[in-house]
Length: 245
Image (cartoon, rainbow, N blue to C red; front, side, top):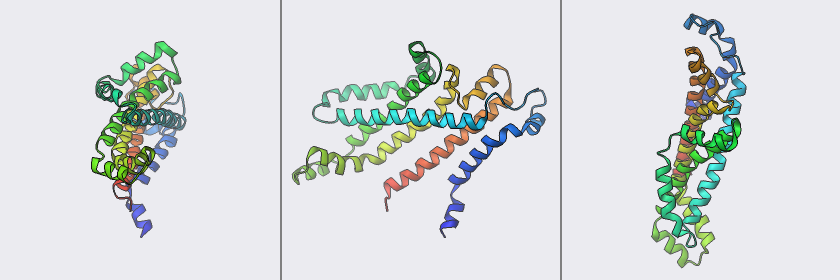
């Protein structure tokens, strides 16, 4: 029964397709040569696709982890009595920050730290921070006051109220914000190749600059599969958050 459920679950199949494609693409010259006969070099070979995949994932994991830690920390901090005066400002920043396009955040990071992985990491962390912060504030605001008052009436300390009442009730909303942040970062990390970061966006950028549609397609397929697999994984986490049993 368990094996049947695994067989019907699309997530492992998408992950396997992503890995197979990343390691098999360098050997698909004949296929892409037939699809794009006008291209002298139909397969991107400047860096291995497998290396670009893992570097892309690493960049997203590190930047998203920074965004999650800061976003949740700030969100919790400004909803405490000592920081409540800053909550309206954080709400405004969280709403207004989403209007900035990712490429603008990257452009602002480059003059400060130069080209390479570092500006990409800074830009991804900053851009991924906003959905997490917004979800943290929304999740804590949605905790029923009756539950908070009952917990305080039972003699719980502020830390106990946060850990045992607020976080469990706000967790589904927080997870939705983290999901949005990570998916945004997967796409934005591809754009980060414009500032010198080695990601799955490298073949896309090279393909666009050299009018090589095959390169663009190869990079886009991998980025798309990575985003789909990540979204499916978060969907499973979301179901467990709502129905922990």
